[in-house]
Length: 198
Length: 213
Image (cartoon, rainbow over all chains, first blue to last red; front, side, top):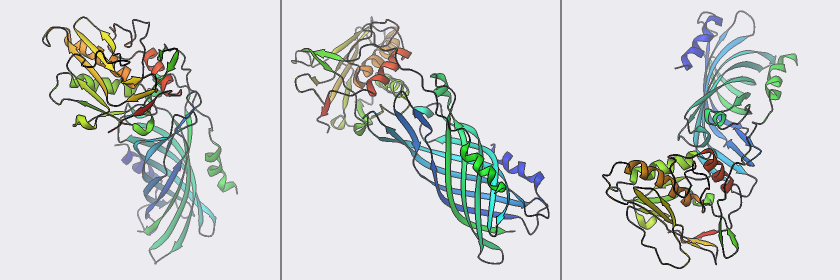
């Protein structure tokens, strides 16, 4: 139920609904670095490249070129177990991630725009297993990226988004078993979709 | 370029690995036969291990609990098991009867004895060929009646102990507070049991598995 909170958080920054508000729908793929890089057991746990869908709503912040974007991204992929101690490679049950972000957006050059912001990533395992044996987990995340648009019609643009985000990963079971600090995780997403002005 | 700084900041933010704890509080988990060392764990390509126990067996809930306990000992899915409906496709067959493999040369059952019930696991391990011939057999039965008080606790402890042998712990812990103690009293998996199992799965197996159906 935290999802609407992030969407609502964007509203005070937004101009009144008008011609500049836009809805974005994109699909693509996300690569993630390892959720765990266990130096003692020579094992990495890394999500496979995940099919990804994103839905966003953007509003201008005023008369300038800046906008605020509330964005929800869903990705789902199995977890790859990668070992270097000859105990074999394996694939564990899928984990879905729901990433909710509030991003500021501004111009770089021409049709290229930057994005930067933050939010939260929610891990939803399909099975209670391994590092997710206690179930779901969530972490704060910071994100940035670039978008490129090209007009398709008077009200619709082709939208290409390249995004990177970072968060520190840990779970209750990892902490209970003495894993210190957290694993820094970076994710890279490439999405293609449409931007529909309202 | 200054407008790109936030994205660059994301890229370089916090590039540290998690700090893994040491895994060193363990007991001997290998078997020694004829001067040779035997270490066994299930290879990942055979996971999940297929376990059969009769659907109406009174020990079935304890099998489910024991599987869950040992699976949760691991963080990277090193051991996983599932119940199957047909014993002819099973890697491990569990029965609520005394062992029927006694007297077979080199197939000594590994026993656990608690006051109300007994457990035996026959890992079907042949030291000469260094092979495990599937299916393994696991037996657990009440010494007296299933209705005697204390049987549920005895079944819970003993089944967890026997599944510990199934995952590859071929010896007994010398510590009475481990479930892999020869006469176990601890109902669960201790930190030492867990670390021993993790160690077992991250060191080479000297035994190969044959006969999967």
